[in-house]
Each structure stands twice: as structure tokens, then as C-alpha cells.
Amino acid sequence: MDGVIVYYPFHSYTNKVENVTSGLLASGENNPLRHLLLFLGVGVLVFATSLLGILTRPEGMLAVLWPANSVFVAFLIRLPIVNNPVGWIMAFVGYVLADLLTGNDLTTSVSLAVTNMVGVGAAICVLRHFCKQPRTLQRPYSLYLGLGAAAAALSAGCFALIYGLIFADPDPVRTATYWVVTEFANYVVILPFTMTVARVPVILGGVQKAVHALRDNWKAAWHGLPAVSLLASICMADLVGGPGAIVFPVPALLWCALTYRFNQIAFLMIVMSVLVMVNLEHDLLMSLPEDADPMLSIMSTRIGIAMLVIGPLTVASIDQLRSELLGRLEHAAKHDFLTGVLMRGAFLEQGQSRIDSAVSKKDAFAVLVMDLDRFKTINDTHGHAVGDSLLTEVARVIRDSLRTDDLVARLGGEEFAVLASGISSAEAECLANTICEKVAALRVPVPNAAEVCTTISIGMLHRQGEEHAMLDDLINEADRAMYKAKETGRNRIVVG
Image (tube, rainbow, N blue to C red; front, side, top):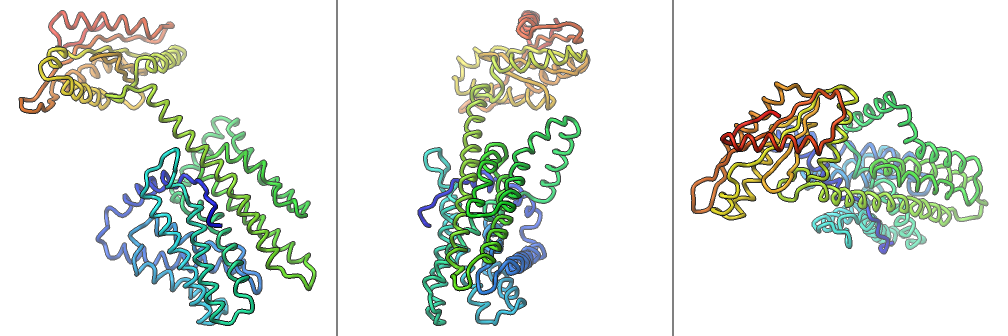
């Protein structure tokens, strides 16, 4: 078991989660009431999920589904503020109360709670250790949730063995093995979901976005076909039955893994696993001969479901990692490394598409070409490092002056271009004036010297979108207007 390593995009999700939770707690990090609510939340959540797990427990066996441990691990990772003795005590109380309310004696309840918490502690140690490592393509340490699941299962199994020896279990090794298999299956199935599930407002926002997409374009419904095929395959497995039914969902799972985001896949995995696990184990227990030992068959089923989940999750995580790398590569290919704005080629491609759309809608648009004044003198006097800092600051000022949908690019050297669509002539001139004023007010510190400042000359074109135009031609025309601005005194705007 401890040799199984599953590559989950844990690092990227926990970064997002920590951003959310840090914002949630920022206003009350020293608020005792907020801390009290969080600690109570740990106990209540562990208690509720333990009760849910106990309801799936066949007589004389461990629960089919045990979400409490995975939920507790996710709680401690995503909200580190509760990872202290008080949080652990509240969780312990939750575990024990759930068992006491369902008929177990105090000794058994405490023993089960301690075993569960040992597994949780092992998972936390492994995950926190690997999350400190940088994520790389060759060795993605921060993606080893599977290793955390194996460590938790083995640790809990060791304690189960100790308890079996203390309380004279007839076969403590078999009991411990059964515990390891069940824990591993539950962690593999549930932990990816609990680690990546978003807050309720985010989920509702996603549902609302999906509804709007369906309303605007019915073809978006095709995006749901992989999930529908998964549901159909689960129904088929239930109807057909037999030893091969467990692999019926595999093609649909792989289709889902290549279509949906990782957190969506994690949700589908937990739904599929619960349905398959409950149905298969129920049918298995009903069909076994009276003298047969059900434990080995149950262990085989749970290992099979764990392996069934690992494959699609691995595919989904690798596909997401590949998409992220391709996204970063595409961004690097289209954006200037120094200023972060678009490069000329990407600007021409995206800008021409914007212009074509504006012409089809008869929308007005403006093209601005701008060049820093006396930039060569600054470079020669203060060095290229100061010149680079000045370019970076000017690009920031231009970006801050634009609307969200406007495009800005560095055409080369100290020359920039802007495309703004859906804008009137007066608004375009106001935008150009704003950029001139902000650049003129800009000051860049220079080591061992006074601050450096500059101005900018702008050539502007405004079109009503009544006829087709090529962006390259418009840039050339605006460029000529910009040189007229330089010839007539710099730090001004000339409309072409």
C-alpha cells in the first residue's frame, strides 16, 4: 500500500483555499468568538460525518463509507488555525460521542477514536512535509495525497493490531489488514474531494454560471455528456451485476477525467464510489454462502474501488498539470517578459479579432500608439537597468488607465500601443490625456542620483466601425501621428 503514489494537484488547490480562508479569518484572527465557532465546527463536523459513516457500517465490520477522517484532515490543512490541542480534543469528542450514541461502549468508542486520530495525524505529517517542497514537473512532491492516504491507513492499521492483541482478538492480523484496506479506500475516495471542494457561495456561483451558459447556448449541454455516461454506466453495473460490474464505469470515468476540472472529478468519484461500493457490497453479502468469510471478499471489493478511483484522478491531475504548463508557455509566448503586456504579434492577432467584431456590430474603436520621450538619453545616462524600471512603471501606468477589455502591447523598444473598442472620440481623447498626465507625474528612483521622469507622445486614431480595417495599417497611421506629436514639442496627443 505505501508504494502507491497518486498525483493530485493538491498544491494549487490549497493555495486557492488558503487565499479564501485567510480572507475569511483576516478580520478576526484575534477574535475569541470566531475561534470558538471554528473549534465547535470541528467537533460538530467530525460528529456528523462519523454518524454518517456508522450508518453504512455492516454488522461486525467497518463502515463502507467513513468520511470523518478525510474531513478532519482537510479541515486541519485548509484551516491551520484549528490544528492545535483544542481542535484535536473537539474532534476526539466528536468521534467518541458518535460511537456512544450508536450503541458502542466507552472503551470501544475511545479505542476507535484514537485509531482514527492516529491515521489523521500520519496523513497531516505526510501532507505538510511534501507541501513544503516546490512543485516541479519531474517530482511533484506536493501532489502526493495518495501517499498521505497510505500513511494514514498503515498507521491506523498498526494501532488496530495493537488493540487486537490487547483485547484478545482471535485474528488481530486479519482485523488490522481489513482496517488498512478500508481506511486506504476511504481516504483515496473522499480526501481529494474534501481537499478541493469550494465554499458554498463559490459552488452556487458555478451552478449559476452553468445555468446561464445553458440558457445562452444550448450546445453547452454537451459538456454534461461525460457525467451522464458515468451515471448510465453505474446503472448498467447495478442492473447487470456480476464480478465484472465494477469496471463498467471505467471508460466514462476516463472521459470525465479528460473533460472536467479536478475538483469536479473528485466530486464525481465520491458519488460513483458510494453507489458502486454500497451496491456491490450489499449484493456480495447477500450472495455469499453461509460458511463463507465475507471479510476477504469485502477487502477485495474495496481495494478494487480504490484502484478504480486512482486511475481517473491520476489522469485528471496530469491533464490539469499539462494544461497549466501549456497556459504558462502560451502566456510567455504572447507577453513581453519585462512589462507583462502583450507582444506585437499577439496584439495584432487579438486586436484584429476585436476590430472585426466591432465592425460587424458598427461599434466605434480607437487605436493609440505612444512612445516615451528622450528614452535613449535616459538609457545612456543612467543605464539599462533604470531604463527597464522606467518601462515597467510606464506599462503599469498604461494598464491602470485602461478598461478591463482594452488591449495594450509593447511594440518594441519604448513604443506601446492600445486598442479600445466601444469608445467615443471624446472618451478616447480623455484616455490619452490621462495616460499623458500619469506618465508625466511618474518618478522612478535612481541609485546615487535624483529621480528619473519622462513624458510620452501619443498618436491617436478613432474609427466608427463602419468599414473593414486592418490593425497593422491603423498602427502605421497612428505611428505617423505620434511622430507629428514629437515634432511639435513632445508630451502631447495628435489625432490622425
